[in-house]
Every structure is written in structure tokens, then in C-alpha cells.
Length: 164
Image (cartoon, rainbow, N blue to C red; front, side):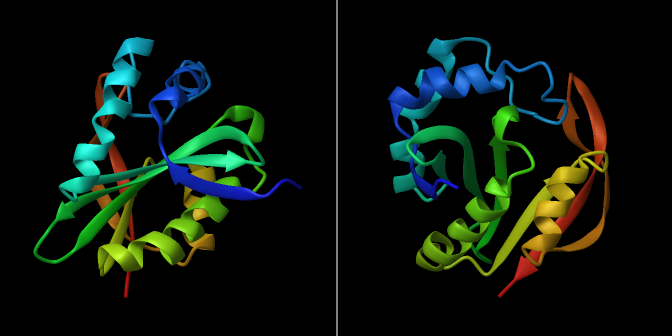
């Protein structure tokens, strides 16, 4: 099995991410990317978001191929709370890649950011993401009503968290 690694996202990743986002089987993806230019614009803004400690976004590599992304959005500066989101190309689902990427983020990067609490907001129907969260030691804290927007509709979501 090829090695799974993460690295900062690059503008040249835009085409690959756009390709992944446009999979009609991404039922639980709340990110809507309308064009390649929109994705390039988002990626160009990553350096500034990282510098201002707002977001830290990484590409997930399976060997040398970009197969997804994982990111941390800082949602509370005073208490150092971060929210993690990720996506994996459908061709690589069920191979433990998201679990490994989440563990890599926790080990290598969250310590540097001094985050004391990490959260994942997951659609209750997204059994694969629930499995990833639980494998990585996150605990379900409750159901948040109309917490995320999917397909222009607000839906409930579980809150999973882990604190240091």
C-alpha cells in the first residue's frame, strides 16, 4: 500500500480537487465549487488564512497522487478550538485514508497550533465519517439541529469532539 502523507495545499491542486468535488456521489459534502477558477481562488487564499491562524488546509497524498484534502478551521481563538473537515476521492473510499490523514493532522500539526479541542460536524447519515471519528477517539457529544447546509437545505449534524 502506498504511503499516506499530507502537505499544504497548492494552487496546482485545484484541477484535482475540482475533479473530486464534481462527483455526484458526494452526498455529504457541504462545499460547493462552481468552477476551476473558484477553486484556484480559494487555494490562493490559503497562505493568508494560515498566516492569520484562521484555517490550515492540506492535500492528502496516496503515494504521489492527490486523493483528497483535510483542513482545520480555528473557530474559537481564546479557547483554541478547531473544527476538522476532510474529503476523499470516491475511488479511495474505505481504505483508511481519512483515518490516517486525521491522525497525521493531530500528531504533526495540531500541537504546533496549540489547539486543545478538536471538533467534527458530521451528517448522521454519513456512516463512513462517523467511523473515522470513532476510530480516532472522537466522542459524540450530541445532535445539533439544522447545523449544516447540504444541497441548499439545512440538516441536523452530530458533534464529535476530542479534547487534550
